[in-house]
Length: 174
Image 1: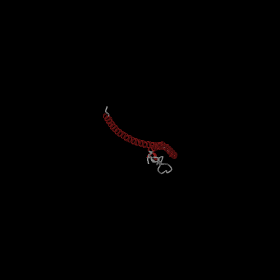
Image 2: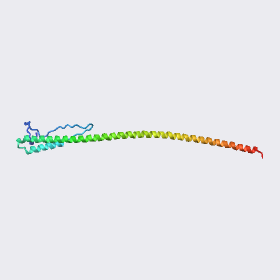
Image 3: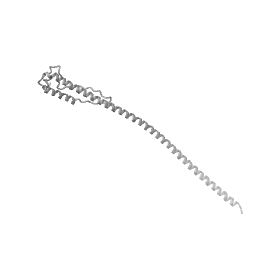
Image 4: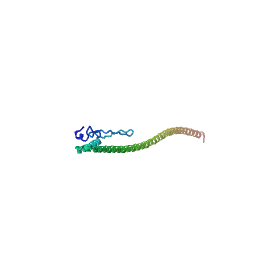
């Protein structure tokens, strides 16, 4: 026990808190999936400073020890209230973030679904266009073959017709 606070908080007096160094455990319920550490060291140090200042100013008066204990208790209650308030604020912020992220996730999932549908439709259109292009190519090739065949038949016809007219002219004596 520190000698400067022993007059205020004697070891034999169990009604008074030992005000030198107190580790106040703080249990925190974390949001699901979220890990965060609360460092209460600064707040505890502030609490210790409060206690030290009370013990330093009242070092000679042992009668005021219960009053100082009440001050320590009020300071501790204030600390707990402040921590609870901070936890409540943080919880509200985390819940808001979670709701916003869930909403964003839902929107993104629906957008991904629409994009996948559009992609599937695009693939189907592409496949249909490929089929149409192959059909057009086949039809063009068939038309060229028919044209070549018709051209040959016309040449043969005109050659035969030319031969017939030539023979007819030669056969007619004038």
